[in-house]
Image (cartoon, rainbow, N blue to C red; front, side):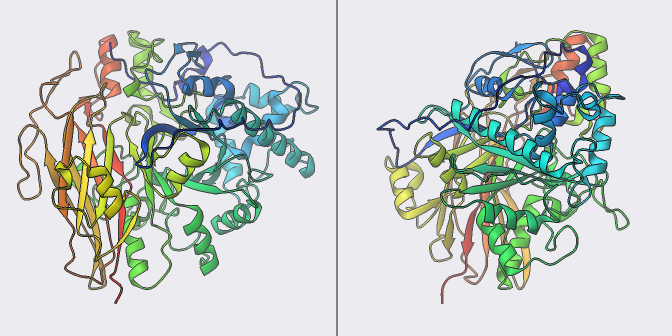
Length: 622
């Protein structure tokens, strides 16, 4: 039976989990990466690989305080398809292994992880470490105190642990060495990619976030995982990261949960109101190529009532639109990716650097050491509450101190890339060129090209070869003279719902203003778009059993559409959004399992979806 995923359940039911002993391991140097096989097959037209670039283990202090004792090694094993025991005590295993993963534990806690998890450390028995292992007042109090420290710039380091700054920095560097070592141990070129990474977690008032995952191309990385305790603002973070990443080091930053950033992640000024210099913007343009559009704590593509929205933006929205007198706990256009892409066009049209040419990925943000464990995986992860009316009701009523009302949470996302092989360098290079897309948790497939494509591109036997020869894939850039035609194909997840439709989202500049439109360009079941919209699908879900009517919908959809070249001086972007037919939301599965009534503020069904990275169109050269 398909069972839903209860996200971050370790945080909810940590008191019910058996806490394993803390970790104890000798200090060792960073393990050398495995030798790359002499020959790894390369596909010049690229293969599709799925992964998760936002994963927390017991080496994140918030996850640890919530009861997670599952270390990075087990998280890698889970990603590769092995069964592990989760923080809840349940055994779980992915139905389909991931191809790549980055464990992104919070760098802000690396000093405490080294001191408080490993018994041989001289600070192990300090009051701070004892409090982290057994937080007084529970995890909510722990997180509240952590946010209070983290909103300063630089953020305050762990009190009572970091009175000696040199000792704290040594602790953090030691944890960073451990992170590299375990990633190198599990990286298997050609078979499974373990990217080295961490999370930079600058905090804002009212549990706001300016968070970025930091991902490296290989084993050449920065000597110290730069955190919010090291920087004054965002520009300072990029400067320090860029200067520290020397030689063969190459790095990407991926912002996430911009819906929690109170409009600051994509503001034209820094978080403290200071202006970005041209050097600041050049660094950001070079290092920040992607954004995480969806994960468990909501979706940041667009929002009803905010900026350039459409009716299908009502997905994973957790906060209301900001009013004039509100500055936090609400959504501004600079929190949403579509509006940010449009603002980037406006900057380009004004002759200014554009730091907002961003591709899109999804990930989970799991704090349970289980990469890729979305509801689409049919996980047994919530077996400990399934069928238990009291446990189910607690889950539906739970309000997390940071994430908010639990039942409104998303089901997790995935990152997908088109790469020539499954190695660190090839996966990273695909991310860097933005040949990537996001899903809300299923493994539906998207391919998207634009350029001087043949009119019959969608029916040619050599379509892929011609698209590579005469166009660019998602994430690429074209001039107006090249952007004649676009081609998109989508294929359902074989374990998921069939496809409903494909949409194209276009943004452009006109007479000094930005404009946007959303059109349906392919419909399943013989429907045709009318005025840019597919008639409503007849696909349905039996809410009592969650059985889908899989006789409706399409296994594959494809569309070819013309580019708009009426204004050769316009800046533009095109990205596609693919919607599946409806399926039960994870809360419906949960409520059904125990005969509990689903709260009225939760939609019983969801249309899983995927978002391609945009193709950007630049003015014709005169």
